[in-house]
Length: 157
Length: 422
Image (cartoon, rainbow over the protein chains, first blue to last red):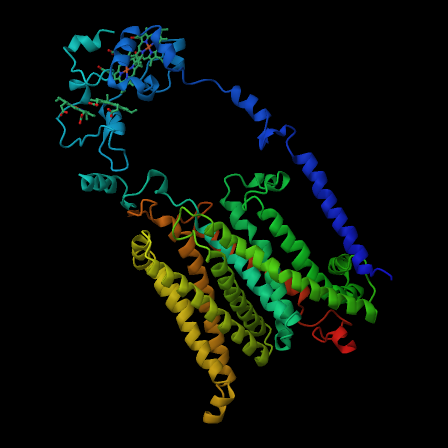
């Protein structure tokens, strides 16, 4: 039986289309794609090139060991310093010129404000009902269950 | 105390009411994601209407057969645009095709789309048009002639046997095409239906509802286009064809509305924990689009209009009243119904896509969809993307559905050589 001419032409077109798909696929798939998983393996190296912005908690101990000691005796010990003070890599490299944020009460409320989606064990306060004033007037941020003794105690550093 | 927090939240976020998680405040699947299922639905529906002619031999629809296919093609070519503009980096879209991933229905979209475009629509059109391309190619000068000649792919054999083969092949493709059309659109419904975290979406009926409403909208679009085309060309409308389309529209709409009603009935009876918020959604934020536009204007009214009109065509009615409704009246009613249905289905897509994102997964609060006027996902873009397929269709009609066949021309299109031979 003779194959109809339509089929022959369509087969040619199909082969050309499917073929060019595979050519495109081999050309356009990034070279390191799939080496490690469903992504470009080279992406890891590119990401590693980024400059670090966070120093990590351990770095702070070297110069702020007083705060470090106090911090790890208190209820906030599980927190990260940079969680309140912001990214500190530049500060660690050059503490004299690169200053860090001293967070205000809004930062405390970010974590402690009453919110029904938070678990019960998490200490929450209602700012309207809780005592008046800036949080750090009555709580040492690095050891929040303690009251600051006197003004100098906190401005000593 | 909880109330106070909720009030504080409401003060800071005017578009949010009740309790909403932070990542739910903004509706991220925008109006463009409403358009996408709407347009693919039109594609699938128009194709299925065309398939009635080929597979189910509804010969009265023959005059609209090619229009249906071209409509389907024009809208299929327009369908990926909303998705593309929704992407933050549209220029990277090809990557989904270059690194296919079988576990994600969204990543497979490109292949489903390509299959439907290449293997179903273009092929069916090619077999149907090959004879005309050969003939038009011989008599048309200039670039148009070249285009027709290229479209023949060099197969210029017009013998009885070859034409008979064309006809058979196009039948086979239609048979493959129906499940493909259902796949193309059912899978859009599947993407929504498989999101089990969302009580409005996560529902096995979702793909079915999407397909049914797709058929409804596609048939309505073909009816609409057919009447508009006849009107523009000042041609008489083929009333038998129109009545058949109206019948198809009525039947499809009846089934679709029944299944969607069933879906809500089932939800309400089942009364899962989500039903409270879904009810609030339906009578609150979605009242205008769901109850008014989708249910009343988009389903109930056209059902009544079409129902009574079609009733007047039955022999029972004609015996009683000695006459069916006048064609003029029927045409007006069909036209109005098709427009209503088209708007109703668009509203349905809106209700699913936007509605599903308006309520919180906490089932305790709502957010608001704020649509911009300009912007790459705003009103302007939506209107342009919705008009684009019509422009494309106008071009296709000029090229492939000429009022008079090119000079010296082919015989009238509709006489099927193969059928004459059979």
